[in-house]
Image (cartoon, rainbow, N blue to C red; front, side, top):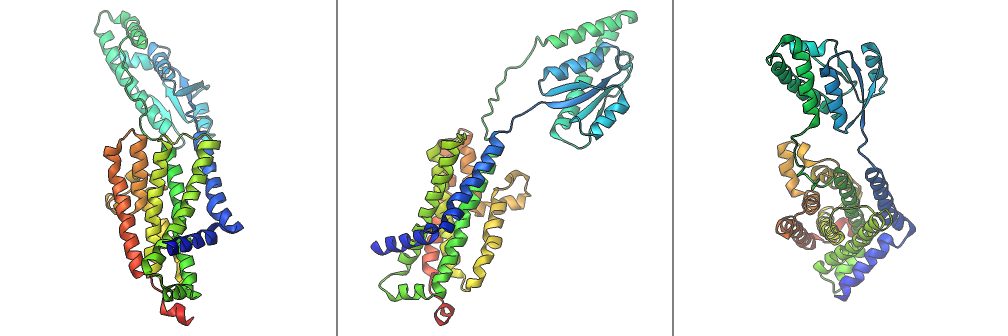
Length: 385
């Protein structure tokens, strides 16, 4: 056991025992994560500015604007005419523009289907929601106009129509909100994904150091001593693992302690997820180090392992937007299960649901470590170099 700890401690000193190591493995991840936290946690759902022109003199145009304002999602600003509306949208003075034509209410009462125009420079969430809301309100007003037109004398249809819309604006019949936002915020996935990416970067460093040991015959001297292959693999594994623990503590300490970021999950559980991911990453490092024989190929690991697995695992974007076959491939990368564990915990899941991602991460780590310890040998090229 002393041999394992000696190898592990030597790995720790080599990784963070220098100024460069501290900057790369501690300062850089914490600074980048802090920037992401600051950018995402400060985002507020501000109201979208909607420019409008209401040329309708009846109750329909007023009702439409009243209902849009009542949602609380829009900041309504009037402009002079349709030409000014188009120019303002082109100049990006508003998220979208709404044009209510003249005689809109009269058209509804006559049984026609007058159209409300929505102008947008580019498709956005605000403009799409505005179209949907305007279409819903238009349909409701058509039904109200039909009831008003069929309710008595044609001369009084406008008054009846206005009375119906006024009653609708009172919202005497409503709904009770049952969605209490019990789902993880999108920015939590971004923060978790970037943290996993930095932790995965330890794989590249571990493999590079093992390659240097091969080239410098250090590993050959270790194998000539009374040290077994699994002890060498486990020592390198634990050394990198300890560095990962320090990195996790630095990132979480800055995010929770100084920036007061709400991870939406108990901190110990978030810590356990990252630790489980570190175990898998170190298993990958041991396996890859045993397979790669040429030290010059160690630099290719970023493009072959780190970046593709982070992309497949959902570190940069949600898995739901990927094709079905890529979502199936994502089951074989640890990032997917780590992010899934955080999402389950943030959604109020219990250990009855969390055991699966943790079990898969643990199985991955065990299998990869066994493989790595079995194939980790000094190469002939390293001996003769």
